[in-house]
Figure 1 (cartoon, rainbow, N blue to C red):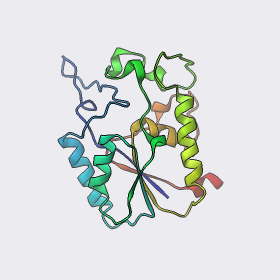
Figure 2: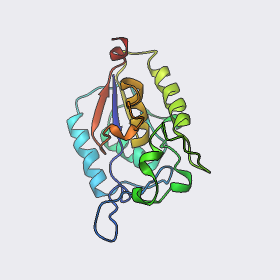
Figure 3: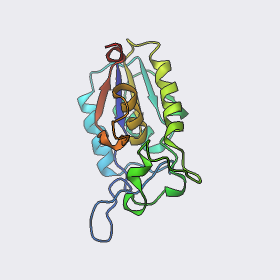
Figure 4: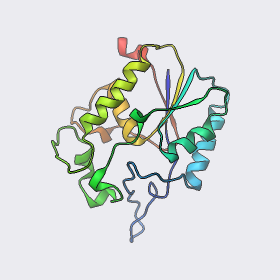
Amino acid sequence: MIYFVRHGSTDWNEYKNSKGIKDPRCQGRVDLPLNQTGICQAQQTAEAMNDKEFDRVICSPLLRAKQTCEIIYKGQKPIEIDERIIERDFGEFEGLTRSEFDFNGFWNINSNQNFKLAENIEDVEKRVFNFLDELKQKPNEDVLLVSHGGVGLVLMTYFKGIPSDGNYLSFEMPNGKPITFDFKDLEK
């Protein structure tokens, strides 16, 4: 069983434009820390999962994920860092708000967009699916996986398939809330 947790909030997750409307900034590989809300989210998840034992704990190398993981997990097993579950590289869109570019198209596999620097969705899928295929070799292990929204969206497609409209944003991926996935569900 995979217990997937998207890192807690950062200031960029909660960014509001000049009109006071929430318009998150794309942080991709920008290495931002959790804000107070993100710390509280991770603490709430830690309380909810406090009696859960994990066979493995795997985390993205980015600070916001590592901070979340360290708050949630207080066990004895070492936290493994895996580059394959780092957030999607937003390239030329790093730091822009979602309203400043075609964010929906960026997350739609059918949009066939070409980027100068940003990682295409097929490449994200390739590395995350490779990671999940390895975990699937031991389907009975309980794994805490702390990563990012983009990785979570791709993880959802692994277990549930690509949405019919190609829009990965059809899946909800809240900050700091655990979502479980079971490899046994793939056999059905």
